[in-house]
Image 1 (cartoon, rainbow, N blue to C red):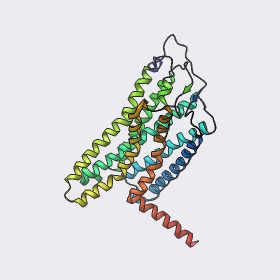
Image 2 (image 1 turned 180 degrees about the vertical axis):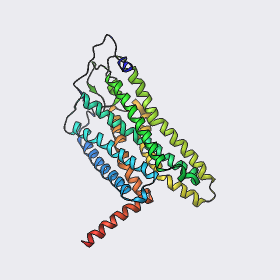
Image 3 (image 1 turned 180 degrees about the horizontal axis):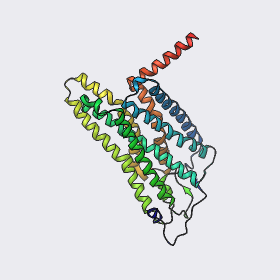
Image 4 (image 1 turned 120 degrees about the vertical axis):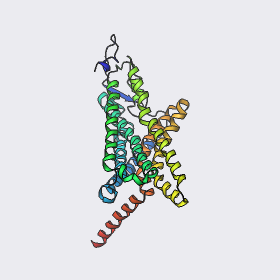
Length: 321
């Protein structure tokens, strides 16, 4: 606790505001239609991820290490969307832009936790694909249920500890500059910049967290696919190469959907209007959870067949009735 308390200057009175104001997007006419659009994106996300989770749970053939990771991805997509979008709609569609201090900190913690787990779950899936293609003979020995559950549990513990440190550092700040957060939710960067005492620990954590949550996972995934590509090129026939490549297309699509918008937004940086940046970041947060289940249902043979079985059994029940 002394480490957190050191973030406060000795001669500064501690100020914890009763509320913050989320500025959001300003000066754009009919912006509420954008939030209506986000609402429909959220509904598709909820339905899609619930279907994927239900199919994996009900179909015993899908209870493999790979689909443990897929189930976890659907779960964090569902929870991440539910943590962000309903509150987003409440703030901007119903003009509840005042949010209490505790609610704001909790809002940030849950959004960051589930968003971080999306990235690390893609790492777990890349480990699965790497071993399956590079070392297929030992795949079932290495990638067991225990291995995948342990890997995902480690990621959860790591993210929860990281986010608790992030929040604890933030709660040691004294907010005497302003209570207006220039973002579409309780974002860490805009919040710690409102602090009027030493923000160095929060700034350092704000730089460290994206490295371990976004950039290192992306580097690992890219490196794993370099190894996968080399292994595919070593296969003897074109049909074997195509088969090996097809097993990774769903995961590659998920990686592209999650990381490309982030890379585009951060590469453009401050050269775009703040409103455009906020819209880009909000779309980056809500689109992957919507597209992930669609990609897996359309590109994964096992899930596609399982969904067909469920629909077929429902039709048979309706006919029998």
